Image 1 (cartoon, helix red, strand yellow):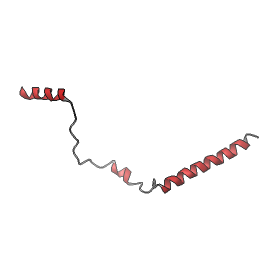
Image 2 (cartoon, rainbow, N blue to C red):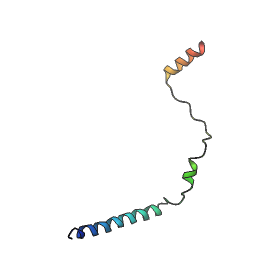
Image 3 (cartoon, rainbow, N blue to C red):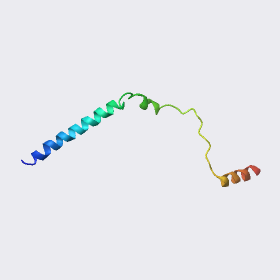
Length: 68
């Protein structure tokens, strides 16, 4: 029974921390736009990817292949 003297205040502090984290997230705007991030992943990337930096060895091999 004496464990309740520890568990009840501990659970109340945990609830207060959870409510405080939720209020903080709402004030920081975490829940302002819930639809756009889900839709953004479905969009195509129109910009071309930059060329890969393969180093000087790959350039020499490419020039050797072009000469054949």
